[in-house]
Amino acid sequence: MKAFLHYIVLVGIPVLSVIVFLQIGENSLTAPASVGGKWQLEPILAEGNQVCTDFLFNDEEPRLSISQSGVYLALSFNDEQQTTLSGMLTERTLTAETSEVSLMATIDRDAEPDRLEGTLTIASCETTLSLSATRQPELAQTSGGH
Amino acid sequence: MPHLPTLLLQIGVILVASRIVGFLFRKIHQPQVMGEMVAGILLGPSLLGWVAPGVFNALFPPESLGFLNSLSQIGLLLFMFLVGLELDPKILRGRGYTALVTSNVSIIAPFLLGTLLAFYLYPRLSDDSVTFTGFALFLGAAMSITAFPVLARILTERNLLRTPLGAIAIACAAVDDVTGWCILAGVVLIVRATGAATPFWLTLIGLVIYVLVMFFLIRPSFHKLEGLYEKRGRINQNMLALMLLLVLVSAWVTEWLGIHALFGAFLAGAIMPKKYRFVHALTEKLNDAAVVLLLPIFFAFTGLRTSIGLVSGVEMWFYCGLIILVAIAGKFGGSTIAARITGMPWREAGALGILMNTRGLMELVILNIGLDIGVISPALFAMMVLMALITTFMTSPILEWVYLRRALPQPLGTTVGEMTEGFPEAGTAE
Image (cartoon, rainbow over all chains, first blue to last red):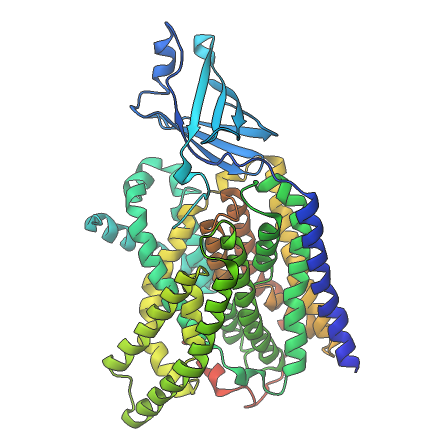
């Protein structure tokens, strides 16, 4: 009997607690919007500022890769230097910067596929460019493997 | 087609690094496998990619990693088969209650703390493509694992395997292993069921049928194989081919059912005959290739996916510290308290807690599954890899300090099942 009571207290109650906590968490918590994966960048409207963007978008298919860990982001462009920015996600707004480049964009989850709209500021050019990107659906869900 | 020279070069570098770092770790009284895990991290973006990005990119170009991954998965399948092979219900004989309670508590305590930790981490380190239930269940499962093979190795090296403490520890780890994998199978099923084409109930029925077939149809057939072995005195190539075929088919079925190939390999090992001589002979055939050649490739592949650079800034390191703290508190605390309540003296109970806190490569296996199914992010993966390394690294010195220097273990005699005599060789990454 004592052994049975031990088992109930030590194992049974924690198992029930886990079930209750899972239910509470599922009903009360929300995680940041998913933005991780590959994004296809659309040509930037940079009249007369081609030289400013060349160093970032010298590839035929400019892409932005976002590695997401919750609100923490690492953004990489597929330029030769593999320019990488550290950023944060606040609700639907994404901000990231280095000393040379800074980016601010909003994610549109209602669009199909998801879209990013925002601005890109390049310090050496003293200019702000508009930025649009479309999420590549096949890579949007998982971050690794298979 | 793989670029063969690149692949051969990669395997050569991995082999050399794992042997050298493994040797160095043995010099500081750590298991070889600990060094091999660290070698994998050193070859990844966290060190080689950071100090010599040119060399790193030339050695591990992204397009070559698929082949390395395939090799590492084959190695893991064989390794999980060996882990299943080692499991023998006989080791529970005579200590069922203590082992059952301590083991169950050592799972549920970190699981509960992991679930609570998920409340804090989910809004910070996850995203809305993952449900809270999936995230919390995975975190709980990853916190509650014990590395049965590494534990067996530490007990052997410290001459503890034949002591009451060693016998209880190995029995608990065995129960932990089976329970942990069952929980993880459930977690993977739940996570993959979200948005899957096959309904959850259909997968579950398929799983039940598969397990029943393995236990009631396949298992008796393979017991006949043991009789054949006894008659011939050796495992011939046809017998080995048959067993490898079972591993592959079983792995394929579980992967097809939507769980993971590793579960199938593990179950194939678990249903094998358990007579010592047979297990020993089979292990001898497979162990060296799996442990010396293929497992380091898995560690290197894990290292290539581990970017410690993603854990940057005070906040991220705080989360990392919290994960390590919760993992230790749950596993060490839960095991110690349960062992004490079931009648063990404090010192032995504490030593058992320390041993159960060893996570080793089993944790890496689970974390890779988590990253594959997208339930954890790359940064959380890196944090949990650090947790696995730290909890494994701390076992030997703390055990030495808390227990071995103060208490002389009393030999248990011959009551530990003969199966445990095979631990130094049997499926054990040194």
